Length: 106
Length: 117
Image (cartoon, rainbow over all chains, first blue to last red; front, side, top):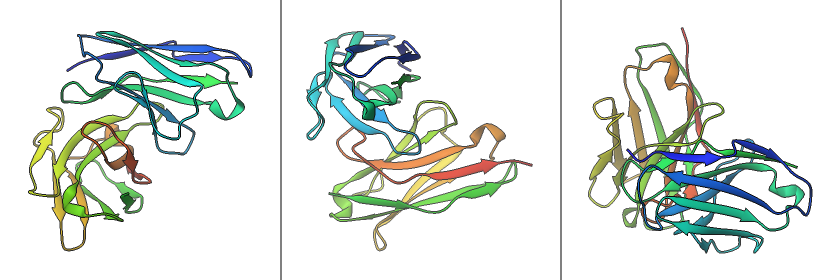
């Protein structure tokens, strides 16, 4: 199985800050990497797929980059509604696997 | 786009089985494949497997092979997850999800399964 490791596991930042979340795969996965946002009591929501393609309707402050084993999700100007957990997920091979999550507190 | 509505919460004893349903609406059922995932408290989601509503083909995570069964009923546009030999560490929210291959676009609301003696 491909292991996905995120860092940091949690972070605290202020409104307007730029933050970056990192995801590392245990083997090369090309750009088969997706990012999700999950708010408490809600289901995960796709933010970015194929490493850098933003899902329709997602605010432009969210962006993804990377390929191979190293990926990042950047929020360019943190907003109060961005308080959530963020997960990366590889779609290269089954079993599809997720990172352990990054909790963002504002 | 497809909407997914799951069955209600369950409480089971260790060793029992549970069957969770997921009713799909809003689009042609047999055009979709459906994934089952679960999320334990404080953890990330975990993919359990996938079933095609077109032909019933399945693909299970090796971790669950032999202990779970996924089925569909095209007459009621419902997908089912059957988990056997429940243990306390099976306590989690179980989700059905659909969308593009290996991208979980649409989710049911989740079903809490609690395994406790």
